[in-house]
Length: 148
Image (cartoon, rainbow, N blue to C red; front, side, top):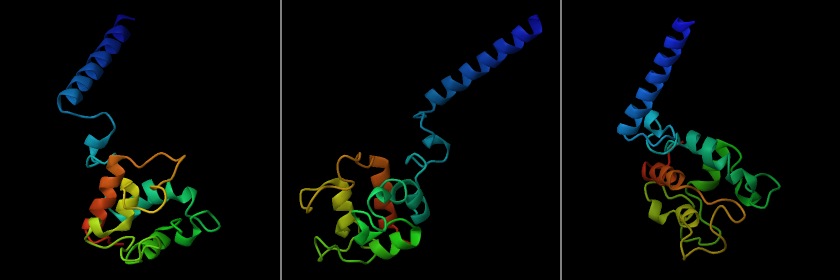
């Protein structure tokens, strides 16, 4: 019985040591120190953005038959076709996504809730706003040329 107790104490000690090491290394505790690149696992790629943002959050409206059906974001292909090099309906002088230029991409204005947008920021209430990490991943994808 004392062997089990010692083994249990050794495991507890190792777990405590690991927690101290992670805290000392600056691990934020959200998994981003384990390959997430500081974006909580979201990468600045279309497949990752589709999985974590467009297909997880935007899809609440931007689907066939939804309130945002004029800009379907239900698949990677639809997201690319409806965002990249497509003029915004609200501000046709700006593309929704201007590859290489997040400042000239209307999607950035909308998700950041800038004062120059028409209507609500995206996503609209009652949805929660995108996190800084989600916005940073979208901006970086655009900066990288918005590749498929």
